[in-house]
Length: 254
Image (tube, rainbow, N blue to C red; front, side):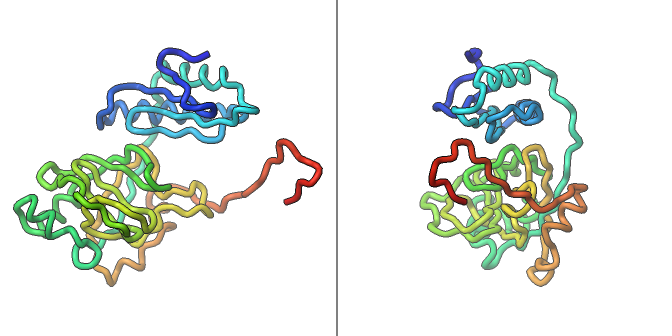
């Protein structure tokens, strides 16, 4: 049984929607707090808990999870006061322009300013990570200065390089790996945004604060993922991988 705010999303997920589809830090903080509360309960059969701008999805194994318990956890977390968590600030070194930012000049023309002014405005804001999505580890961040908030490209590129920093309206993001994409690319970082051998695998998390640091290309290679997290006060380690065999058959092998 689910409440009015908790709905089924297929046969292996429940979705809690907290408000309208807007970019609002308080609404997002609620979603992150709800996801954290459900995650901390460690309900058997739950595979993942994902927060978005304004909702929380809980993915579970329909054969082993107690769906009523999952729904109850979501409903309880929805009505509980959000717990305060220290915000983590992460500095991201970025090479702006040239080959790293092929759309910088076009964005400057849109904003009716110089490329240097675009860089100053983009790097002069501390952004909130609202959610991860699209690709594993891709951070959706806001709010970009309104004067440089160019819309997505009319025709997306078939290939956007890993580490590319883009703008799409009032949002900015970083491509974790090479992929198609339509954001306005103004720079690139050498940091690895997603590494499945790390715990957690994503460099950034919802609720993080991000500062972009203009960096010469010659100095970019000295920045690495470990340094970034040590400065942010985050401990990283290797992932212990395991497999749970739920229903072994006569010919089951590993």
